[in-house]
Length: 418
Image (cartoon, rainbow, N blue to C red; front, side, top):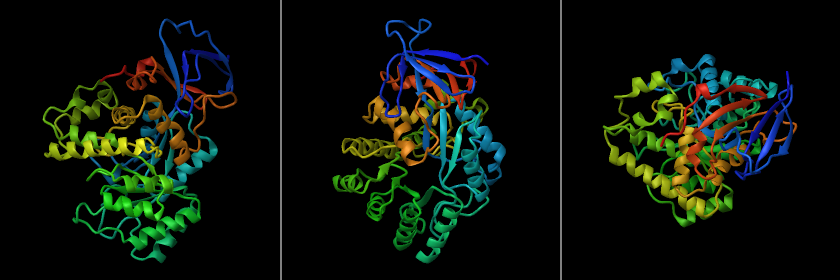
């Protein structure tokens, strides 16, 4: 096999910065042989193009839905592989399945990472079995294996150790009583989960909705709030505590927008070409579906979540890209790019948005992510235009490389849609 040469006008680093015009040489092994400076005055085939490391999503769910309904029967390796292949064609190379997996899937995904098996699909990472309250959230509908629901700290410690023994590097805890409708995991149990996880070097993610729960979790040392606070604006004290404790935010704005969109009679997603292309048969089945009949409530949650991103960002608290995609109406491959756009609309620059999907997520979970650099496998996607000027251009995918293999080209992908 001959060396492949790709000329780009912009080469994006993990921190979202532009390393300039470059010629990428990919050797017969699939590794990047060298990167040479290109003439900045020359357009690449008359069109400006950008190379970006494969995106990472720190809050997603694998094999729990077909996009239209959620059901345990979808939790199969075949569906996991289909989702990971689809995500790769959309420039998403690292997907963190957060708390809804079984032991077999956690072990399978970990073994794939160790062996480097990913030639035609994204890397999947699993947070294993999540922790919730007895008779609390989430319900046992998303996986054949129940969540951990410890009632005392000693039980929680044993369960964390079990996940650690399986090689788990991240864990998820759900802290949400849905406004008093469900039991909430006791604070002493939360404390035990977080403390024991840290003893094993495990990064802790927490589902959170209410401000009061975010305050408690940050004080306990949770590493990541896995949603934006959505009941009210975050106080300066909470954000200052996050900065002091090193707590990151993964806001999942695309989740909130999807629920709002699917509450409207005139659903804007049904006019979004990139959404439709992310699952054509699914989109047809979703056309008349409603997530709820309360669009005002969903809109308010989205507005609060976005404003909280702006507040957290202004205080320089790390923000990672996460979508909560994989459930019904939250389509993978679309949600990751839409999350970039929504973070941008919330006040983050395109560079900061890409940093959230790359550098911050590498720190949180994406151990296999690499820069576009010499000696590394070719794992990146190429888009037409410069996303540092317009973040919507990440959708304008021209081709995808993963682990040294050209996975897909223009024939399988869609131009940007607003």
